[in-house]
Image (cartoon, rainbow, N blue to C red; front, side):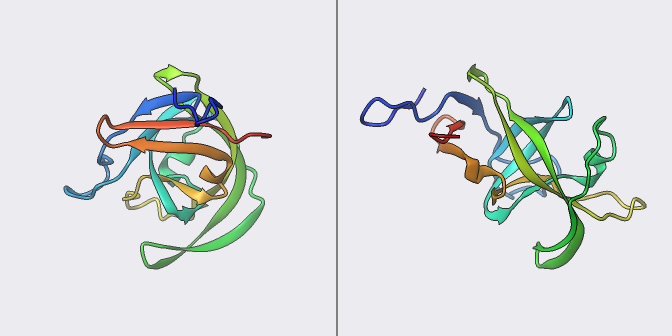
Length: 152
């Protein structure tokens, strides 16, 4: 695992990442990692410029846990105003070495017209999600390192 100069542990887990999400068109580069939510494993794209854990509404509809909406909310997503609900939920970053890490995040579940497929991956935004973790990327090995922030 990664350590800081004073030998303090930086990351407690590591997982591989993919360069593209299956829902993305070819050539759309991303960092996509496996996360677990409600007992289901899924792929989510890292979005350090975004807010919240944007949960694919098709996935939210089949997760066996309930999302109690805290409030209705609007965000800018792909240049569009998107309405949805904010909820608190637990996600687990799944490690292949070290320890998996469970974290409570703010999930945004977009309102969605079920007559057409949702064309976007779940997204791990910085605000309300990744900001509670230490994380690093090694593009030479496609590894995503993560761990808790000190004092959390």
